[in-house]
Length: 209
Image 1: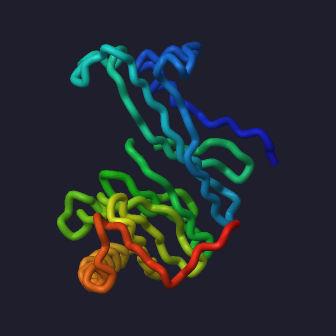
Image 2: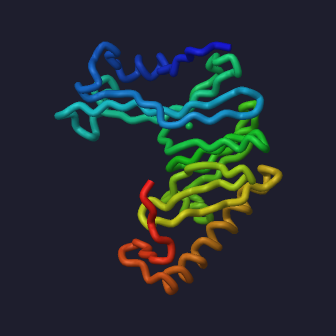
């Protein structure tokens, strides 16, 4: 077992954007790990971000060597810590389902699912009207029972989606969950009467930790 494992920065990205690796993060670029998920096989996935923000560079700068950028990267590792592959563009987080040996990932383009072997088994396009509501959610976790747990970015609502036994059914399950979420949200608004999507509650008194 390797105890020290590098988080790789693809050389193709470095070359394309002419990234100066000796430049300090305080000068407008950086790299940060956001999440790590493992599967029973011992393989694991790391989610991290690399970006550059240089003052005075136009948003539509055409030269990649000068342009600002932001990427989220997902790297798959062997159980021994060797990197196998790096992908996915603009990401939020990843969630592992150890019971079914799956990895889920949500970004602004789609909801993705991989098997334990690293093969992509499903992709739900967020431009599809059936899944467009997912653009407003962030994926946080996968419960032990196999439920995806997401949180709405603005409305302070959590969403649970029960993962199907077969990933071939993920599209229908997500579509049904989002439809139910919309209906349940309408009922909750009448019951709770939130102010600017803040759900005030006095039934569960807070305790000091």
